[in-house]
Length: 207
Image (cartoon, rainbow, N blue to C red; front, side, top):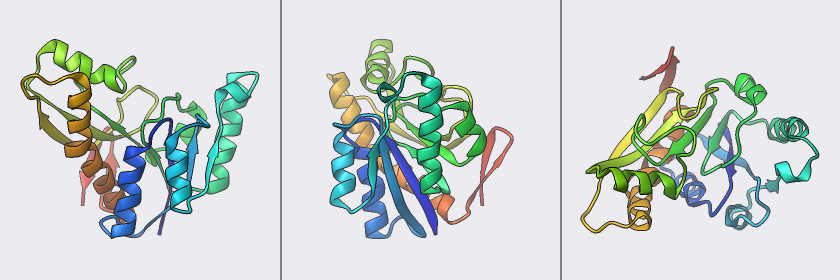
């Protein structure tokens, strides 16, 4: 059984997609062991509570230094003892010590087709604003392993979504979530839970 901890900062729609997958059986061999947010008002914590999943808030604002936060954050994750850490809209930089300790056991969902519109400064609505400003016709989402770079880890899954005429950033964001993010994140968790993913260098091989 794969023990998963989900890290979230906001509403938690991707968390909900994983919860739904586990409860409906499209994600197998998996339990969500905990949810951690850096935002005590995140609706994601309410989602966790509604499904009897332990949830806690641990924020950099609670500590005098970033080093102290990083230490306590890693401790909080270690207490849960996850086999997999899922970043589902988590807007805090993951401490290097955590990346090292959980190498190839941390995944992230990013709302673009990496390597487009990714890296420092590209998150949330900013990704979709940039895509529309560039005039691209195809956008999408990517699930990837987390390494020391920003959106540079091995890619697990990608799914494309068409841009429609008259799209606003908000409309495009919603379509990317519905048609891509909420589908490939649960699929990636299921693949990992069933040992169907291995990392070779900076590439992912499906078994």
